Length: 189
Image 1 (tube, rainbow, N blue to C red):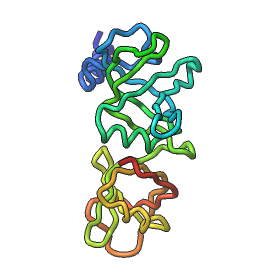
Image 2 (cartoon, helix red, strand yellow; image 1 turned 90 degrees about the vertical axis):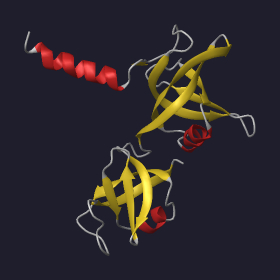
Image 3 (cartoon, rainbow, N blue to C red; image 1 turned 180 degrees about the vertical axis):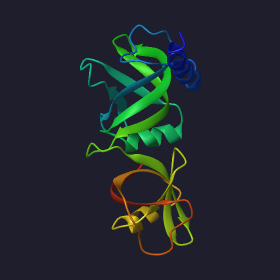
């Protein structure tokens, strides 16, 4: 019994973090109003101004979900992550077409960068002339290397980046920051 307690506590902790939100592979059969988390690849369809956003679920090729951004920030995030593997959180909403499920998207997180690497997402800031990205988990990265100047031009924006931790860069290292040399990045919002 004692050996099972840590497992039980871990499961309870996971449930409490996202209380009421369930991870699913499809939203078929779920009631309107259900809170879900689902992985897939974002796809913009149609032509401006009549574009729609779709989540393709790769493990289930027949599953496609029409996405409705909850607000303008989410809309911008979805547009900028087109074609990438993401985790979507939202609420099941009524279908307009009986064959096509719909989701009101409240959150979208990038899971894989275009090169397949694990991305770091966060907000770009300038601190005493240095470019720093504060990741969503609170970790700070001092941006060095060839893409530092390009990333600095997006101060205040939320970005994703991939690359390598560096040993040092030019200039004074910001406090509590790890040197990081991006090899790729994208602006989320």
